[in-house]
Every structure is written in structure tokens, then in C-alpha cells.
Amino acid sequence: MQRTDMIRSAVLAALLGSAAAAQEPPMSAIDWLSRSVAATPVALPAPARQEPAVSTGAAPEAITVTPLGGTTLDALGLTPAQRAGLPRGLWGETPTLDLARMIRAERVDTLPAIQSLLYALLLAELDPPLDADGSGQLFLARVDKLLDLGALDPALALLELPDDPSPEPFRRWFDVALLIGEEDRACETMRETPQVAPTFPARIFCLARGGDWNAAALTLSTGEALGHVDAETGTLLARFLDPELADGAEDLPLPARPSPLVLRLMEAVGQPMSTTTLPLAFAQSDLRSNSGWKTRIEAGERLARSGAIAPNLLLGLYTERAPAASGGVWDRVAAVQALEEALAGGDANAVGDALHPAWEQMVQAELEVPFAALYGERLAALPLKGRDARLAFRIGLLSPAYETVAAARAPQDGEEAFLIGLARGDVARIVQPGQTGAAIRAAFAPDAALGPDYAPLFEGNRLGEALLKAIDDVTEGARGDLRRVTAGLTALRKAGLESVARRASLELMLLERRG
Image (cartoon, rainbow, N blue to C red; front, side, top):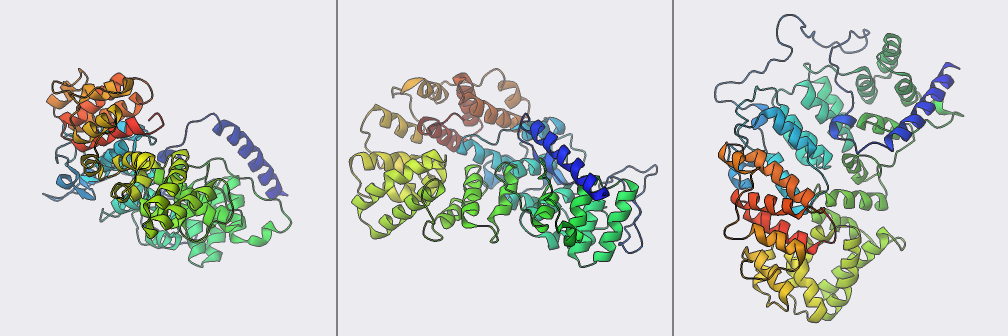
């Protein structure tokens, strides 16, 4: 009877939570992370593995030991600064907390070129800000933004760089491992990391995954008695430990704001959750081989839009086998497979016939740039004519080979002349098409000057802050305030990021959406 009351309470809480969630903006990583690491370790029953005591005396709560010439968390990265095209001292004098706040506030849905710049800033190996105190606040903000983008592989790679992880980085590592299906590895690492104190739910989960079901059950009882496991989580864990409790019982209510740990527990009790309305990182769990093909394709499309997976991975999903039906995602699968077949045959006319339906499908799904990365250069090299050649030219301009594609094209009208000029970075003597073109042309003018908001940042050793502001300005400017487009593009060019400015400008001209 007590369990029934718990379930009823959980249902009511879930319904109330769902209504509230409908009014809330998308959750960021810091909102959905599992409470897998305890702020204060709690004594556990004998069967559970005992963790070393953590001092709460006069010593600081967290001690960072950095050898002379050593590396702090904020200096860790995956890409050398030079290869990323950024100066090592990019962060300069901007306060660490300001940078962390700006990074966490950056929009996920932006132009692909701007998205790529954000990735570069998140992954580059740069000197810490001048006021860095070793706590890793900027490092955590970078990881959290990667999680918001759904980019779990680079986030995991960053989180594995520290030799001796502290609780907050480990908390993120644990959740990433859960989302990509490495639960056993996550639990093993938790057992081998004595400085990290797991919470009761995480400990129970890992004890069970390790086969120690009796210790898991005793830990659950202790956690409930001490108030460290709430009723809803207790009911879920009880079913996880004893599936017979579900016999004849109603399904558990679907939690409105699940963590990765709850997602895995719901899957384990036979109630897998759809991730389509969950934060982007959760889509990575649908790429696992135990998910259906349609589910994997839809997850791949979501992640490809944010740049979290490579276009080739999406292509592999599209071409895995023949479409199972028609409509929606299956029409995209069929269109891409038809284009692949035409390209393999080498018939330009067949390619032209297949290209337009495939492109229309990509436009509807906002996957134009991944499509261009796959096909842009190949299409531009084919002897296409008329409307086919015109479309192939535009697709090629959205690809990494945009300069080569532009150099090989004789402009057919004023718009194409402007696009070719943009690809070359010279539109000074070309009449721009429309207001967006005028805003872009102003940024590429020989006398374009930094706006009043940017000049102090460039002069005050705050270049990283300036680039984060430029990302904001181009993203928000594309939604209507074209003065911000000019300001942001000008700043990118003054910072030496010419290719980013050109590609973002081409996307502003060619993509049928705002930001």
C-alpha cells in the first residue's frame, strides 16, 4: 500500500512537472545532470564499499595542486591553439566567471559557420584567463556547452584529460558515459575514484550493475530511511532491483525532467523514454545499436544540425538499407539514396534529376550544410547545366570547398557575382542584393571599423570575449537586427577569422532561415 501511495504521488508530481516544463526554456546541461556525486559523503551500510573520509575542517574544501609549469583545468583542450587559428592568450584579462557565463549563454541554434567557431573556442588548448584560480570554472562551462550541443565525444575526451578528476568534472563524465551506453565503465570508474563520493541512487545503480544485488537493496533501504532517496526515485530503483514489483502494477509515470541516470533506469525497468523532447545530448543514446533505424536516423539528424556528429555518420544512417515506408524521414532516406545511386552511375542528367528532390528534403530538415559537406565539391565538378548547375553552385558555396567552387564559376547574374565576391572576400565593387547583402557588404568594406562595443575589447586584451560577443551578434542579427550582423562580421575579420566571416556571410545569403 505504501508503494501505491508513492506511485500516486509520483504521478501527480510528474503531471505538475509536465505542465511547468511546457512554460520553461530548454534545459541546459547544469539543469539535467544526474545528482550522481554527493556534496558530503554519507556513511553507508557494511556491504557497500566504504569511501575514504573527506575532511570538512579548516582546510579548503577543494585543493588544486599544480606543479610548476603544470596545466590547470582551464588550460586543457583537444586542439592546439595554432591549429585552431587562435592565439594562446585569447582569454586574456576577461574575468573567468564572465567568460563562463557568456559561454553557457551562447545559443545552440545558430549558423553552421558560427557554430563551428564556437566549437573551436570550446575545444582549443588555450592559456587560462589571467584571474584563473585553478577551480576549473571555464573548463566546466566549456564542457557544459558541448553537452548542450549534444557533442558527447569531444566532451568525454575533455573530461578524460585530468589525471585526478574532481567531483564536478566526474559528475559530467558519469552522465556522458550513461548516455553513450557505457554504464559498466562509468560504474567501474566510480569505484576506482575514491575522491568522488557517489550519491545513493548512483551507488545503488552501480552496485546492481556489478552484480551485488543484496548490497544494492540494503543501500536503497538505508537511503530511503535517511531521506537521501526521494519517493519517486525509490519506486524506480525498487523496480530496477526487483522486476517482480511491476507484475500487475501500472507503469511508472514518465518523469518530465529525467537525468541520464533516470533515463537508464527507466530503460532497465522496461519503460524506455523517447528523447525527442529531451535536451539534445539525450539523442546520443538513440544512436546505440539497440535503437530502431528510424529512431537512430532522427537522432542523427538532430545531432547533425548542431554539428555534434560528422556528416558521414548521417550518410551512413541514411544508406543503411532500403526505406521501410514513405513520408517524413523515409522520403529523405529515399532522396539521398537516389542521389547516391545517380552519382555512382556518373550520369549528369540522372544526378540533376535526383539533386532537386534531395535538396528540398535537406532544406525542410535544415540539414543543408551537412549535405553540402558531403556533396558540394563533387556536384560542382560535374558537367551540370541550367538550373541543375545553378543549384550545385549554391550547394558548393555551403561546403568547405567554397573558394574552389566560386573560382570555377562564371557569374550568371548579379546575385551570383555577389556570392562569388563573398567567397573571395571582395565585394567592394559589387552591388549587393537586398538588405542582408548590404549589411554583409558593409563588414567587408576596406574601411570597415570595429564598433564601439568591440574596440575596448580588442585594445584591452579581451579577444575571447570579443569573439563570444561576435557569435551573439551574428546569431541574433540574422533574426532581424542587421546592424549586429555587420558589427559581428567586422569583428571576426579584424580578429583574423576571415574564413569564418565569409562562410557565415554565404550562409546568411543562402540558407532559408533566421539564425
